[in-house]
Amino acid sequence: MGFDTSGLLPLSDALQGMLEQLACCCDTEQLPLPDALGRVLACDIASPLAVPPFDNSAMDGYAVRLADLASGTPLIMAGKAFAGQPYQGEWPAGHCVRIMTGAPVPAGTDAVVMQEETQADGDRITFLAQPEPGQNIRRAGSDIGKDACVLPAGTRLTPREMPLLASLGVATVTVRRPLKVAIFSTGDELKPVGTPLAHGDIYDSNRYGVRAMLARMGCDCLDLGIIPDDPAQLRAAFIRADEEADVLITTGGVSVGEADFTKQLLDELGEIGFWKLAIKPGKPFAFGRLPRAWFFGLPGNPVSAMVTFDQLVQPALAKLAGQRFERPLQLQAIAAEPLKKSPGRLDFQRGIMSQGPNGIEVRSTGSQDSAVFSSLSQANCYIVLERERGRVAVGETVTVEPFGGLLL
Ligand code: AMP
Ligand code: MG
Image (cartoon, rainbow, N blue to C red; front, side, top):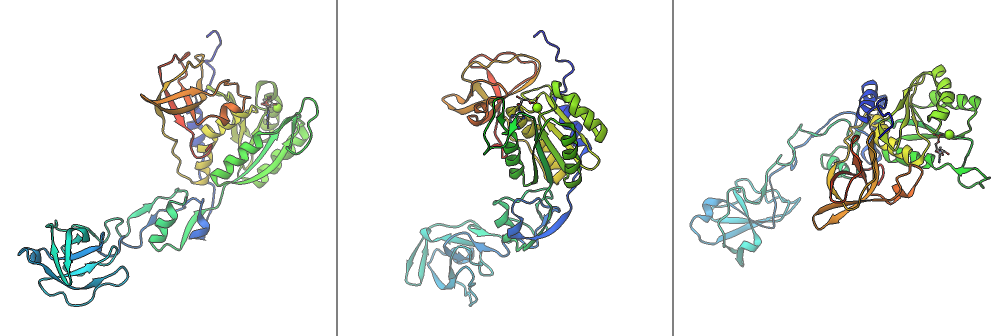
């Protein structure tokens, strides 16, 4: 489209380049299970038990031996088995055992016949259906075998894993300490919320977005506030972050007009690459190593900062934290309105997807300017438009990526 995009770095190359250099940097600690919510498992968890630990009934009904049912005559109830109170009496031929869901099935049981398929006349039980062998019996180990890996190292513990681990009797887990991430915003124009704005000032919004995403990832955040465009103060902030954190994330100061300034400082302190990414929003991006900490320099434009964090920084932090990471699914959707696009960069437009009569439809949130917050706040997905693609007409198929855990 008349401008040179050949020097831009594809997102996948940038991501691969970063991930190749990064390795988990978080030590491990033991925590009681309830305190480990949100933490990342440092080792595979092998089941110390078979689950269920014994053969048990999946229904309220009667435990039977198939041979006793062959004659078709009613069986006599020999006794009852409850969850937590196994039946321990004799089980003579021609008898059945009344059994409740979760109760251990008595030795010799071939099947459990559900109550609805029987008729009781006192202790005489008539069976209306012939059960299959094994019917309504949950076999020991059928859910989880003893020593089977139930959760691999790198799993972040969510409410879904807690009851699973408890069901195995796991009282303590070995997890990684949280990744410590220092953040600051750069810019003379930025003011913290809660203070008045002078002409030309804006509120520092990026730090609130970055902090929130770090919280969602379970990172510890060291918030160094707003640092003005002043070499001495920037230098002091970089050095402090490097000494106190595993990672430093800044926003602003990496675009063309300002990069020289930051670049000079960072070239002196570490080895940082200043990239021009072939994505929109979010062209300027810096990544590299300070003496001790890793550094991610995000663009200052608020939407660019959020999108580059989500797409690039999130997988990198996951690797440093020892956390397995999978990108959210991408789906195909029908463009319900035209979408503006120039070839040259991979677009992460912000869209609203919904269920239409012929499948998933997607609309734009309007202006895709990277300073327009509503484009992100109203959206529920990215519309991912390929690098070489131009404008999209109504009815064309496009790829959508529903917002994942960070942005929900
Ligand atoms: P920069 O990358 O520093 O050139 O900033 C690009 C644009 O983003 C400018 O309009 C800045 O005012 C704006 N900006 C930079 N940092 C922030 C921030 N923390 N919060 C809101 N806007 C910002
Ligand atoms: Mg700036």
